[in-house]
Each structure stands twice: as C-alpha cells, then as structure tokens.
Amino acid sequence: LPTLLELHYLICFRRTMTFQALFLLSCLAPLSVAAEGVVKFELHKRSDEAMIASHLKRERDALLAMFKSGEPANVHLRGLQKHENEVIKDYANAQYYGSVSIGTPPQSFQVIFDTGSSNLWVPRVGCTHCGNPIFGRKNKFDHDKSDSYEEDGADFEIMYGSGSVVGTFSVDSVTLADDLLVSEQRFAEVSDAGGLGMAYALGKFDGILGLGFSSISIDNTPTVFENAIKQDVLDQPVFAFYLGDGGPGELTFGGYDSNKFEGDLTFVKLDAATYWQIVLDKVTAGDDYSDDSGSITAIVDSGTSLLAGPKVEISKLAKAVGAKANIMGEYTIPCDQVESLPDLVFTIDGNDYAIPGKDTVIQAQGTCLFAVLGMDFPEGGPQWILGDVFMRKWYTVFNYVDETIGFAPAV
Image (cartoon, rainbow, N blue to C red; front, side, top):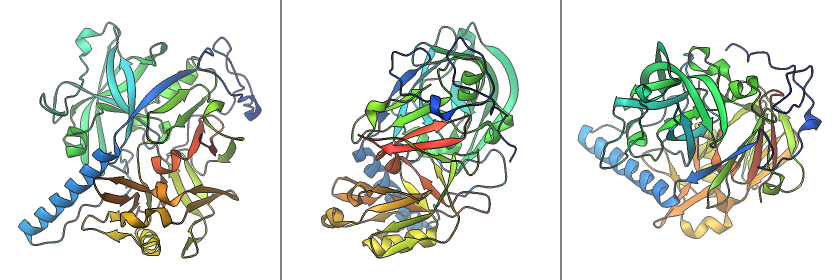
C-alpha cells in the first residue's frame, strides 16, 4: 500500500497558524468543546435489542437457506484482498452513527464514522437498493440543490464483505457539527448500494465517513479529516471516541475531552498507517486461553461493534469461556454464565487493556451473544479487530500526524 501523504512536519497549531516543523506530542492538551477548532458529534447507538434481532434473523435466514439448498450455509465475510477498494466488513454489526452535512445549503446525512475505511460516500437521488419509503428510508444527496457542488465524474466502486457499492465522485463542501467547514471535499454519490444488502437497507445510517488514512482510500482520495488538517480548521490533528456504556457516544474532532476518561492517555505507535493498525503482545482470558504467538496485528475499528480474531484462536477462546457457535459462526453463551466470564485482556506495548467478561456479551431477548467473531484475513490484513466492544471500555484518541493511538479508561 502507498504511504500516507507526508504530513509529519507539524507543530501543534491553532486555526490561524500555518504548518511548521516537527509535531510535538506534548502539545496535545485536553480541550473543551468551546475551544476554537474543536467540535463534538453525538453518536447515536443502535440498541442491543436491534443487534440481537439481527443476529437471530441471520441465523434463521442461514438455516432456511441450508434447508432449501441442502448445503451448509457459507456466510462469513471475505477477508482483506489485494484490491485497494476492499473493506473488511459489511456494517451488519455497526452500532454507532452521527450527523454530517454536504453542500450549500447543507443537506444532512447520518453516517458511520469509520476508522476502518477512508472514503466519504452517501446515496444520491435516484439511488437503487438505498432503502425504501416504508422502512430503512435514506437521506439522498441532490447535487442540483447545492451551490457549491463541482462535478468530478470519476467512477467509484468499493467492495465490502458482502458485495460492492458503486457510484461517481463529486466535490462539495462538508460541514461537521454545524460549524466546521471542509471545502472542496471529494466524496462519492452512490447510485447502487445493493452490495451491502440488508445491513444497509435496515440500518439507520445513510452513508460512511471514513477516518482511516488516504493510503487505503479509493483513487487515493484525501480523507475529510486530512483535508480538515490541510485547511487549518482543526485545533489539533486528532480525533477521539467516547462510546459510553449503554447510551449515546461522542466523537471529538480537533482535540479530546479529559472529562471522558480517567488517568493519563497512553499512546501506542502504529504498525501501519492504513487502518489504524497496531501490534498486540498477547491476548488472554483467565487461565484457560492465551494467544502469544508473536507479532499479532490488530486494527482499532470504530465501524465494527464486535471483536474479531483468527478463527482458530476464537474457537479456542470460545471453548475456554463456554460459548457455542451457531450455523453462522456467531457465538452465544448461556446467560446465567455471563457474570462468571473471565476478563478478556489485550496486552499492547507492555500494558494490559482489559474488557470485563460481562462486557464481552450483548444481551437481549433472552439471548446472550458473545461479541467475538472468527475471521481469517489473507497475508497483509490484520489478525484481530478491536471494535466498539473494546472502545466502550477504553477512551481512544487517534493522532493522524504522529501516527499513534492513545488509550485511557473511559468513565
């Protein structure tokens, strides 16, 4: 993969200052929402009941498909391929979304702020497989109503685990949290979202705003966050996620909120500036499970609600905690055992980041879903995905220029 555009020569700055030499991590002081160049988004949370309902529906559909065909269901997501437009999920488990506006006057969209991809896309007027008026209604972009719209016309296609999404590139202004304007942002107007299937049709989101690096964006398109840095509209080149615990989350652009975590942030250097990839020392759960097989790669992914790891390792982990796989390869656990589950611990750069056992389970409707998936990626892809289950317990700060991720216990 090509490297990130060289943005390494920055010092902490305010909106009125220009880029200077050498970024200093010590400049990352905690900021309030009132600070200039810092904005916050409320992130709405898809309910646990909806997550479990989707799980049960996938299970029923898989059983029905197997009954009709006489063959075992094969519903696992594809892994990362060598194509630049491959994204390693289909958002079936996405749980958090927030608002962004495009155009002049602004047209509002609900998007998943996704650190596991790098493009911004929304459906266009006339888009097929983009919801319907009865359920899953989507907001659609009408470029004829935007005074700041510029035609691009290049083809856009992105391949997700379940299929492709296609459209064309356009250029327009993007407004973040009502008052932070990123001008001349290249994004995609999607004309067919059929590749995302029911995950999109039934989802509460209209599109995706990728927060990965431009090295993995379609057609090397600069990301919204990268352009916000270049246009000097942010106080600092960082963003931070607070996902709460059962309620709405919060995404901060341009700084972080020290009221949302305890103690100090511990920063970890990225292994690759692509999907926010880091290296794990080991993964453990009580005395009965440990993956310490060497250099274990993982991505911190706000667009995936669950955790994911190699199928062999997840099978061992599930056995160790008493979880059973269904036909979909998803694991459930008896609800009366949830309180006795061991902590799941990710050791990163010598520090332990624990998820209490009960917090590795999504519970509703009498079903307890073990929030861990087995997924194998080809060489070059990550081995583990640390999704929202991890980020709910650990306030997470992403430093775009220094290429680090900071963690602290979320309050």
